[in-house]
Image (cartoon, one colour):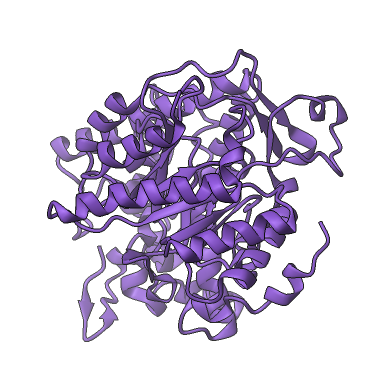
Length: 488
């Protein structure tokens, strides 16, 4: 590793493999060592998988900080880490550049002198891109629900790459009393049974939402019930709240770190005689482990559920749920925020009613929106005929317009989480410009891969750099009128 003196890197050539002069390297023992160790490692990686940047500097991996050859024990440990299981986590930056941040301008001086420009050093580059594409290609050969199960198992086993997003205080916000390191979260629906919430946070999300969970386990609707619309980068699902029930999810959440930002999305059983009682049961069951709650009354796949969005029913639901929350607070518990998740298919009168009840009950926030029943503009007309809720890129404009209209109705102080079609840093930023405080995604990750949340966070940091923002909140509502006026 490079040694630092007075903020400058040590000029000893042992620490600057990239800057060694040709004369000092040619024919030297060090040169022969590098050439020998740069060959593909036998019995560990196929040559295709070994075709990553930095492979020619493998010798630096097996050398000590002073440039000396590593002891046999250290080499064995390093080689074990080179097995396929560790491949997805390995950085694509050359071993000799691992300390680039510490050395900064000291790296790449020789190339800069030759080419009259500084060498480009990717700060957070990983080799996950090609692997993501390979994994996606393989998963797309499978039934969508089978592929979903495999992805959950991959996260459980640690096979998925860690794509932690860089910390940036400009992206940090306090919403409903909770501190969110960045505005990007995982929407409910992926981790229905709280199997991998902490693994999802390691992908770069600042928060994740499990569920929807119902008091009793239920199988959901008949299969097949998930359909990919590849041309549209969309998904149609009619799952029907399939989940393991409150007890199983609670046991898993109790094992999670208490500081993790994990929300619980609660719903009602399909055959429930009292659906409002099911939501109250969700509040009481998960109160000790949830950082926030979402009352999901907008899924199109449970008959009659969206009727709870009608004003009289909604008033009764919110009164009961918030009373249960207040009882828990009265027992000495912390105050856990409660959000309401609504549909994108509301009429103007329906939006008026929801806004009135949210304000009347002093609800903590709104999530806009769930999946849509609309099918306009889809390329894949064959799959478009399937019943269920549509999510993914085609939902972006509709959900963003509803978000802006709800912001107009609720005013500037009620937190709103924008969901639907978030596939890039720009679409995430546009949700914020339309009135969102935070954003969530799920379906677009099916097409963009697990690196998507990290890319969005880095893109939002880049936006702050470009527009000289002190906080991402400065762009909120900047295109509110535009989106509220969209006829979609």
